[in-house]
Figure 1 (cartoon, rainbow, N blue to C red):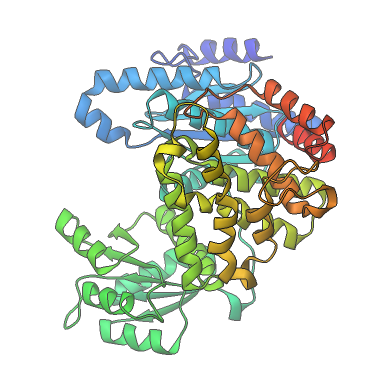
Figure 2 (tube, rainbow, N blue to C red):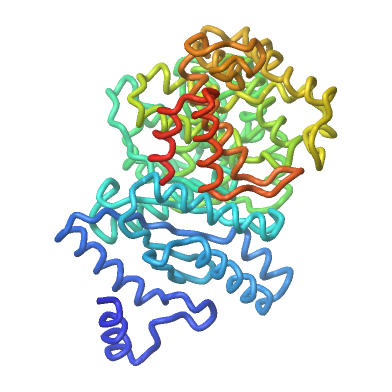
Length: 494
């Protein structure tokens, strides 16, 4: 069927179905194949995933190195993508610096693992100097129409960019809320036309929109209404946006409200001044609608998280990020472990409290390593007995750091303290036996070991999946890890 499609495409267009630079399928034939894949779904019910991959900061790379080196970079990245997808998957050059992959007969978990593999391969090849961001959607979960899938994949890709690049994001569905619980967006601009324009652009999100036409009015509104995000103009009379932002970020009660500067100013000095005032983001007028909606949704989620956490919690999560910054070999580890643990927990049928414990515990399980020196964390060889004792203390130290947050963290504290315990009592810090180890900690132990073994470390290269599964099963047979949890994980990754 694929050969026939290629022949028909070349016959109809008089052009090669492949992109001349990368050897991937070109944009036109990709569209034809996507139509065919949708028909296959309608006829046989075959699920598939659509993945968009964009080279981060490619325009800057081209400007600095020239278009020839830029083309060579694209060719090399396309080669990396080919090496990290299955023979049944289809890769294409979607546009200048964007690639597309159709992952046939794949669900959300398959696509997520495939995207992670591609992202890590690119980052490792270029020592994280050049990275890619990835947006993922699945058919039929996110739609069964070509336009819908591509649009949602683009939005997911934009989310990945907004959240810091070098990451993959699935499209997230909106959840309808009662009016009184819908997020409130405050738009501040002295020009009535701009207020109406931004309000109209935000309509698809169905948020509550509150408007203010001056800096003084904005401050008064925030005193009366608990807003979730502020879109703030800079050039206003009497009190400009910089001053409004500075005052809001200087108050304990309002400092966690995300503020986006929306202005016609497009110079570095204005951006620096906005950042100094505490702004969370910066958009140029007139804003791109898709970008505005994506950033709004992202920052509203940040606001929601801030509502559920105390100021101390924010410090703790910052510390967790600081731990990863100390150890270049574990960057992304806590996020991967957290996500995989939650997916595994769902497969096992754990309840919502246990899933929350895995999510939060996964994010914070290594926070105690803040007390471990970088020399030990990055040592290019096995730790000696003294160093190992220092390393083992990270579970107890992490538990003590997070203990003041017991009310919010709940069972996540058990994950932090006991994720290195073994069923036979050979683990640490307390040498617990069997059922003495909380179930959520047993889940985290399996996932943590899996991710540690498949990724590169200072003293060894990452192992292949087959070998890692074999090691886990051996640990299960020896009574160190729960064999049922291991088999659930094998189902998840295979």
